[in-house]
Image 1 (cartoon, rainbow, N blue to C red):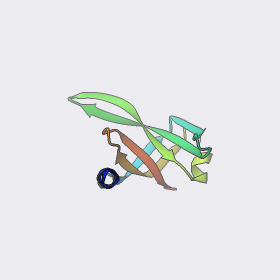
Image 2 (cartoon, rainbow, N blue to C red):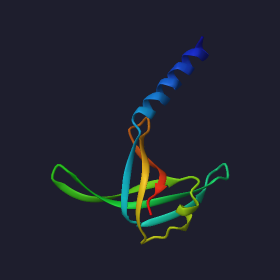
Image 3 (cartoon, rainbow, N blue to C red):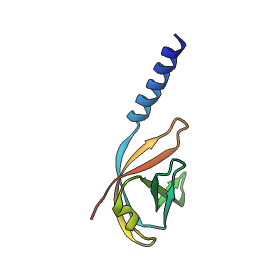
Image 4 (tube, rainbow, N blue to C red):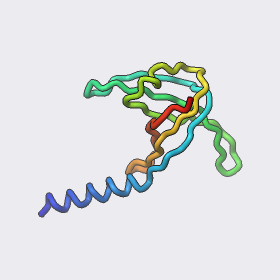
Length: 106
């Protein structure tokens, strides 16, 4: 019974996180490109693109980090390159946004 309850809770978390995902265009000049290896030995790339924002009249710049898990084209990008990226914007259970690369627009 406890196992079924756990499965229902996990399923509802998964479904609710999927409902919060949307495709977005991220464009600009890359301010950082980092290639890493996960703990399981899988390579991935983090592409950082600056974004101007405003909150309560205060303007500031932050970076959007787009994670790429299997794009050979992402591995070829360098800091300073101008890019247009199609990414899936998702929100984790803590409300943090994260982006996963879907395509590089050429």
